[in-house]
Length: 255
Image 1 (cartoon, rainbow, N blue to C red):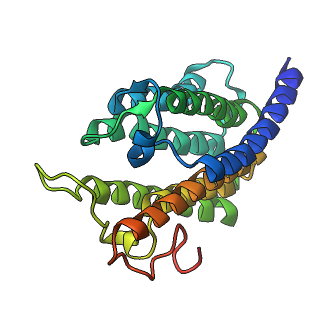
Image 2: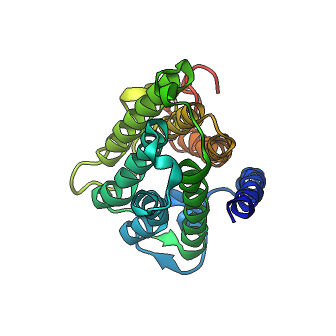
C-alpha cells in the first residue's frame, strides 16, 4: 500500500514540475489575473478575504491532519516534526492572519481562486504526506549545515514576506485611493519584495528538507512569482515617471 502511494506521489511531483512550466509560460503569455490586473478580466469573482482563506486552507489542513493521524510513521523523528512545523507556520499566517489584515482587496476571479485551491491541495498533500510518512532523516539532521542554512533562509524569507506585506498594506492612509510607489525594506532594491521573501522562504525549506518535493515547490514558486514580479515591475515603470530605475524585478542586485 505504501509503495503504491509512493509511486503516486512521485507521479504527482513530476506533474507539479510540469505545472511549474505551464504556469511560467501561461503567465508570460496572458499575464496575471490577480489584484490590480483583475479588472482586465471578466468572470465570476470571490471576495478577497474569503478567497484567500479558502484557497490557502488545504495547505493548513494537511499538516494538521498528518499531526493527528496515528499512522504518521515518521513524525516520531525530530527533523520531520520541525520541517512539518515550518510548513504549518507559514500557512497559519497565510490562511488565518493574512486575510484578516487585507484592506480593500480586489475580488479574486473564480477561475484563479479554483486554480489556487487545487494547487494548495496538491502541494499540501505532497509536502506533508512525504514528511509524515516517507521522509527518512538522521536524528541529527537538524544540526547539519544544509538544514541550518535552509532553516535560516526560511525564517529570513518569512520575515521579509510579512514585513513587505505590511509595507504594501500601509501605503495608503485612511480614505486615500490609488496606487503609490512602495518605500522601505527590500522595496528599495526590488519591485516585489514580498515575492522575494516568499521565494527565499521556500528555497530555504527545499534545502532544509533536502527533498524533490521541496525543490519542485520552490521551482513552482519561482516560475509563478517571477512572471508576476516582472509584470509589476513593468507596470510601476509605466505608471510612475519617478519610479527608481535602480530597482530590480525580484532578486536584489541581480534580476
